[in-house]
Length: 107
Figure 1 (cartoon, rainbow, N blue to C red):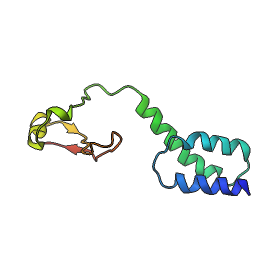
Figure 2: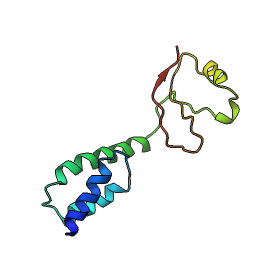
Figure 3: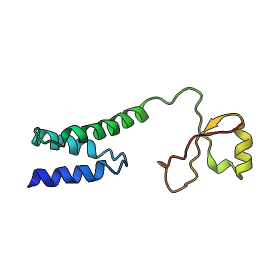
Figure 4: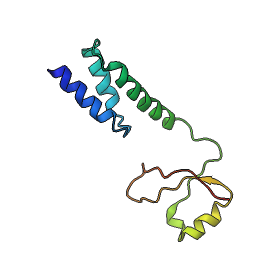
């Protein structure tokens, strides 16, 4: 019964694709307890995607990437003037440092 509940828990959370880092060790524990579980293959694909994501963001920032302090920008026009011609990502949500806004190209 515990195996089924654990598999259901992992499946529900992993298929939400919210990249919850805490699920990596939970999956590892599940895999060590129930190595023959038939969901492991599908769940491992999702867990590996999460692990690779966190490895990538832990690496060095690419050359040429800069962060602009939003406190010094008064308007969106001012921001667009500063980054004209550059490729950029904008996080307009001040309450979250993890929000990702789609890629933009300001030409």
